[in-house]
Structures are given as structure tokens and as C-alpha cells.
Image (cartoon, rainbow, N blue to C red; front, top):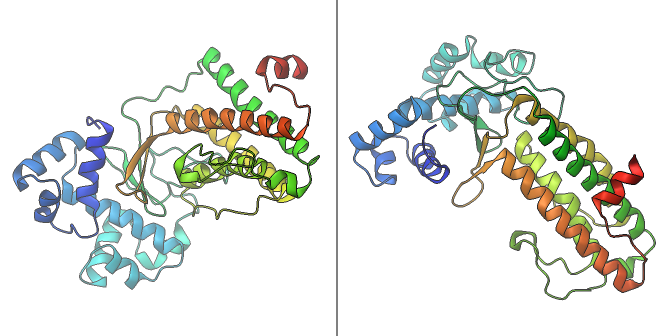
Length: 327
């Protein structure tokens, strides 16, 4: 794609909005004439607006069929006037009828150009993807995935990879340390408001207690992994220390393997477009990892300040100390 992230988001939003089933409505949404909108979009994406919408809607229908939707429901959700018309389009695209989708998808048939998942928590389930000239694909449940332009470099950049590995592993080791130290506090002390009105990120709400800070430290990885895997976002779960520790031990290895997989595929520039945001927002995978690590470091230090206020003697969380001890 040749557009910047904001422009890409605007054009795709115009094409894929549920109410924009025609080129006329797409162009109106983008405040452009039909000719200018079509030409700009096609030059930038290598695909006409109508063709991209039809393909992405078929990808969504294939994913819905795989997950139990009826052919009729998938057909009308994809904007087709009849089941027969949908079935013909589906067969042309996938090579088998929609009634077979639940059986065929997930059994190994993949877009030859798409990266194969390493295991069950690899980012992006791609077996419903169709060949695309621009890397734009449906990403469940309501998102888009945009592959990075150009050739992907799979040769390891050893210094950068080593630094990243150190940061990821230190974050997890330090979080585990803080969860263990938090068991030395009783429930009241963990839940006590220490920094009234403290907000780290507005969408996460107040983080005024040890429990809330540690809860969001774990939840951030759960949320982003769900977005990358196309899964439903987890509920804001119990932040009791035992439950939180179980959740952390579940998410930690998945987080590590996802980052390894992104690095192996050279997919740091891939873009996830989250349609649940209003308006939809674009997130580069490298930026997602940097975001999580940045605010994880901030929250780990917040937890330390709160624990010291209770009287716990906690370390500084210095990666240098961790590196020496682990060596």
C-alpha cells in the first residue's frame, strides 16, 4: 500500500462500511466523486473498491461458515441478494461450495503466499484469506489485517533480536517476581487505594492499587494477543492474586511465541486495523510490541512504589541486575 496509515484507514472504512454496498455510497463516504475515488483507490491498492469489498466480504463469510454460521446467514451478511449468487461467487473464489467450508477450512488449505502459523497461538488465522494484490484481508472478528509492502526479510538481525529478546524476557521475569511478592500482602493491602486518581491509559481506567496495576499488566498482553489472533477480547477478570498468576502463566508463553513468529516472518510492519474502534484505528505490529513493553515497564515500577508504601523491600527491577543473576 502506498498510503499513510490514516489515509488507508479512511479509504478502507469507506469501502467496507456496512452501509456502503455501492460505489456511489463509498465515494460519498469519502467525500469524493465516484471517478476520483475509484481511481485513487485502485492506483494505491491495485484493486478496485468494489473488488476489494467483495473479496473481504467473502473472506469474512468463509470465516463465519467455519465457525458455525449457516450459508444463508453468511450470504446475506456478505451483501448478496440470493444464496445462489453467493454460492457461485464462493465457488469461484475458493474452489468448493460454501456448504463445505466448515469441513475444508482449517485442514491445511492456505493462500500460498500467506505465512503459515507456527502453532495454535500464531497471529492471524489465514486459511480463509484469498489472494490479494495489496495484503488487505479480513481478520476476525471484525478487523482487517494489512501485510507489509515489499519483500520480507527473514535474515535475523542479531543485535536487534538479542536486545528485543532481553526486553521481552526481562518483562516477563520481572512481572513474575512482582506477582510472587504481591502474595506477601493480604487482600485488603493489595486492593487498598495508594495513588488516588492515578490513570496510566484512559481506556484501562484508574490504577490506584497494587491489584489493579498488576491486573492491567497481565491484561494488556491478553488483549493484544486476542486482537492479533482474531479472538474475542477477554473480560476484565478477577484480579485476585491466585487467578492473576494463573492468567499470567497462560499468557506469557503465548506472548513470547507470537513475538518470535512476527520476527521469523519479518512481519514487524504488518498492520492490524481494529474496526471495533470508533473510528477504526491502524496498529503496526512493531508498534504494538513497543507499546506493551513501554507501559509494562511503567506499571512494574508503579507496583514497586505501591509495595514499598506498604513496607515491602522490593528490588529496583533493573535489567542489568536480572541479566547478571540469570547468567
